[in-house]
Image 1 (cartoon, helix red, strand yellow):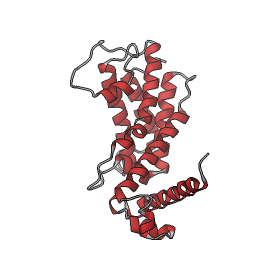
Image 2 (image 1 turned 45 degrees about the horizontal axis):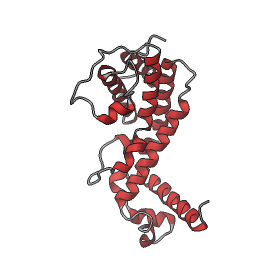
Image 3 (image 1 turned 120 degrees about the vertical axis):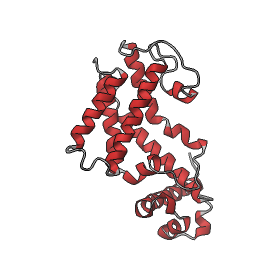
Length: 227
């Protein structure tokens, strides 16, 4: 059981992070200020520095929290008992819904890089959660005989992290399938970003219908259209 001191620290850390998320909505990540956050929570700047020694530490917390929240949404939407195409559609829809509900946090994760900030390795596990869900769907599709590649690897094309997440040992998943999956996933986030940042205005009449069509086309690209 955590001690009283540990509970208080966790509560204050969460309160500071929540105030920082509100700052994201008001000024954006590049202008995030520990001093401004300290004022909002009624703490001295020196006190906030005991919890987050720098702005970058606070940004890292916000990024990890964001990736974890998005990952939780994707995981909750995935029903292992459903056909793989339905699982793909449900997860994609959940990712979009989270992004629409949390546009400023989404922008922190997938928008313009914050000048002077480099995300540490601490963010990798959280950032991989949605990819792990996709990898699970690919694994089920492979076991169902829906995925067809050429059985080979292409040295220098994909990193170990992509191979690990996207079915390293699953039969039927090779680099051809992984490239299609990465293309589909990046296209999904590109479509969501276009919508959130206003780039579909004037080009798409019905955002919901367009997104549903994109998800179906990307599923077919991977090989999930035969269910």
